[in-house]
Length: 213
Image 1 (spheres, one colour):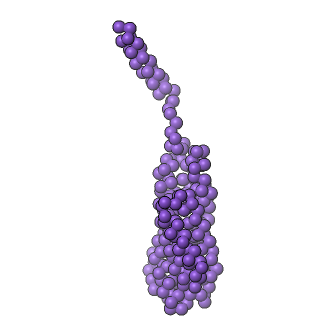
Image 2 (tube, one colour):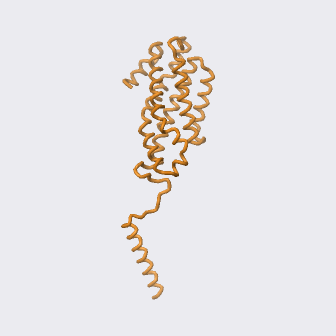
């Protein structure tokens, strides 16, 4: 009987404690879980990285062909290596992120400077240029989707100190995404406009897809 009484009182104690904890709003903390209004970190990161990496690789592919059109062979070779690195999911995600961000940004500046009215006007150059256009359109259409996803992820990370430490590469890049998108958009329009002025195959189709972007 004593043993049964102990079991009964133990059960009653657990029931009372759990009820009290519920009313008091007590709960176990979630490791890397909800971030107080910022949403789930894994979900926010997945949304951002899917759009970022796909758009960045497309944009770098376009830049690779444009460098060939501009006879900038060193830049083309460097860009090809960056594409391979970014596509290698065995590499750390943060390193792939910073590599892609830096490559796209630096390449955009280089192309903007090199794409003068007299550059890439030969038939061979225009053939390379034509290869760049579909990638440029895909890259640009993906890139413009990034700002809200970047903000969502950054807000989520800021609400979780452990996440901020783990995702330090993301924390460095995310605040720069608006300028990254602005530059990519400006250069993307320049590339498509340059294709039209050079009568590059596919230029009209590319311009139509971009619309009033």
